Length: 491
Image 1 (cartoon, rainbow, N blue to C red):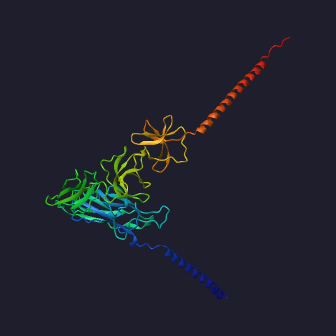
Image 2: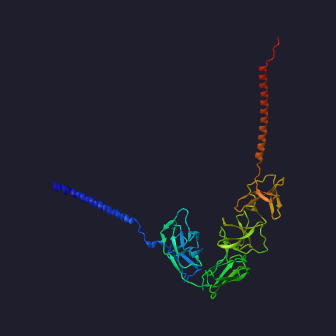
Image 3: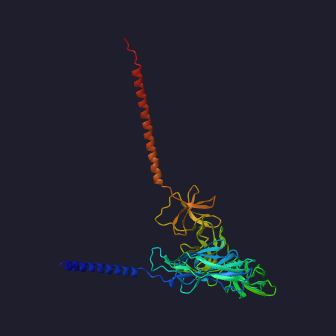
């Protein structure tokens, strides 16, 4: 009987233990399937790369900071680039060409440059609609984030180390993408004696882009500048500190082609290179085939402003970008619209006002327009439902620049009905002394008459009340006096 009881107990116990182990096994499998497997190959590697060879003291080093891939990244950084500050100095950094839509922000301290980037062209829906969100750059191939330019000190020797110590966060439309540091760069400084390098490490024309992209071994370049530019500044960085550079040209530019010649002589005095930049000064301020499309879909062609055309008083010329074209405009402080010289294909070319916020374009008509301190006003017809008070009679007034058509009263007050550039119409008072306009409101004569009657009524009531109060006070005082000083009775 005891043996049977033991068997009876062991059987259920064994089943319970087996069930517990089975349950734990299933749970472990579930957790294993839920936990994502991290694949190192899927991470973005941020590495450094430099192609410099035969380095010696005074040489320029260009080090690329490269992302192994770029899966729609919209923000990154801070990426911290480090170098041996005992052997080189920081000169500058250049944004990667593929990251043209990114805004980079840089900070630096001894031996470290920290750079963060934001995709300014990313289409990120404000309501969080992921279907509409889109980054401006996708690449499964390596992408250069930025290039750091260093110069070796005159006494440098041995090796110089460049590396990335931190990559910060890489975000794709707000989602974090795994990123980590990759390999660094170790460059040997072995050359001794004078340098034979007569190349330059960079060439820049202020305010213009050269073509083709700069390469130390390409010696011929072209760029163009606007009509108003008569001088350009040339910035050249020699590949070796002791190279001699002579720049000829860049001043007193003529219309058409101008040459800038850059002669470079290496430190050894034997090797020489010449770079040439063809600067084209455009005779027109207007880019070729440039046009403007307004809110209603009408197309206007930009034209140069003829010299004989007079510009409205208070406006001055500047250059702004409209529809990706750099064009001349006339602006006035306080006026949101700018003046352009346009051709609509039907009317003769002329001045037009353009509002960049509303995309509205309307022709400048000096015979019917007045440019106020903060608005552009055009004379308009008074709506039929508006009644002009009898004291105002139709009249005109010549301001010297435009003849105003409006109304005038016996006091000489002159008013006009204007519509502003937003389409809002109202009466304006023209001050003849100050030659200025201000909004005008007609006085309500019925209300004034009613107020006058009410004033007269209340004045009469006030006078009556004053008389009643005066009489009451007099009677009360007499009563008080008689009680306190009674008259003697006759006997």
